[in-house]
Length: 330
Image (cartoon, rainbow, N blue to C red; front, top):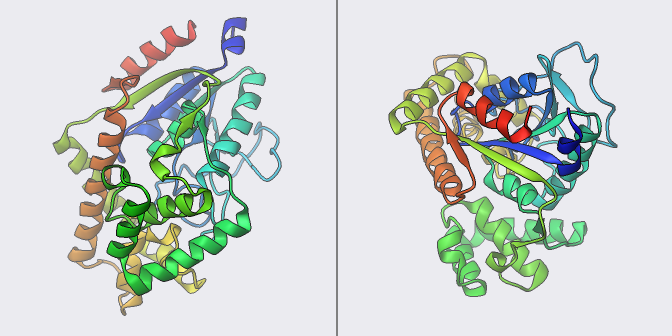
């Protein structure tokens, strides 16, 4: 790798909706260009949540894996090192600020080793926090836990609609920027408003980006996306998704935790908690519920990413490789 790459601190991002092939493309490009992958997936951070998050599971052989950075332990899937997988237990609070701090801590080390960092995932806010170097409001961890717990109680006693109404009073722009049907996002936005005393939507300030960034997005037709999602859900169930959820339930993780409200975990968890069995086949309504929720999530992801005109949309690995090679001048 030439000196230009090291000096300009390159960062390649691969984004897109769920089931679009981000992980496969990331691994392919990382192999071609001697890279390491930083996961940008808000669900893959959790230990014990592998099947339902389609996590790139590490190989048993961990030879040639870089040294851990504090509590951050890299893994290797195939020939590619992965970071920010399995870094929190399901009951832990892991904030956007923590993700940004961890990712920005890892990337310089990858470049120092003469390798290319690939930020790969569909959590748009994670990607934006790194690419655009967000100035994220800081709060005391104890205060965050206290406020989050209070908002969780309010969610159950007052309902989501009342919380959303409270958010819109504190932040008038939240009505069109925050999904009022998503309890976790409403709570997160309210939490920031309460911690800082300022509207959530006015706090995405940016500092100068640290990196020369290439963003690649995988685009598929709506029909192809639905086909892939239906296939993936069936594969996850065949791999033992219900059993994975059952293990989490037996550990007494609260079903309202952010981790446990993930797509699939919520639907299967509800089924099992109401007397359902892990024995296949699962009821069609449970499977269809997961499919529909995933399709809706993919649509929201595309809405988020399409707003960013810097993203180069590709349809296959060859096109992505060509653009990446030109970016890196390799």
